[in-house]
Image 1 (cartoon, rainbow, N blue to C red):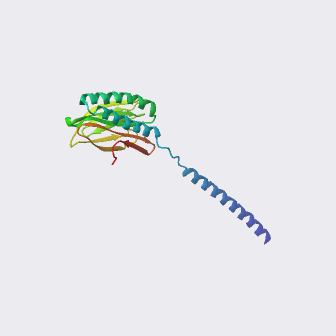
Image 2: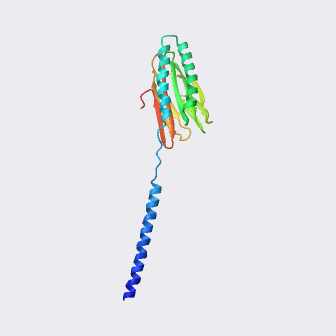
Image 3: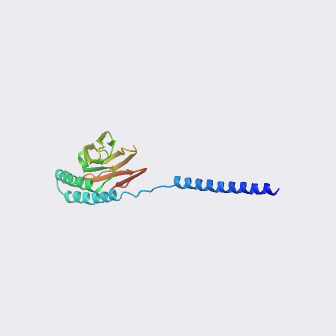
Length: 198
């Protein structure tokens, strides 16, 4: 009888040790599966948006008392300089739309800037669209859009995820300067605008 009990004790010890090992393996798998890496928000993306808002509005304010032609020239000069600033300060893929000009004419100017590693960036303004091919370099496109009831609807389509961001821009009768920017990182999409987002 004693020999049977000793054999059962060794058998029980083996099962207990095996159960402990299995528990550690399961806990190890659970720890690996539940590991999540959280990326920080793109700080430079927001910094560039802040600079664009402050400086762009200054250009419009300083040119606001002159003819519309001079305003458009001032804005276009500013946007050319700003494109160089973007090249140096935003490293991630992004799309930016800037609406500027005088809505009294029934049309406003739109400048689109984009850097996409691959794919095609599509920006829609009602029936008008601007498409830029992703090449890893800063791309620029321009269009004039019709204005109805002092508003314009802008839809930006992300080239990698296909997600769309639609924003209605409320326009002033005279000097307008509005922008919307978007970038994505993994499953996160970041949006910035000098207008209230809906």
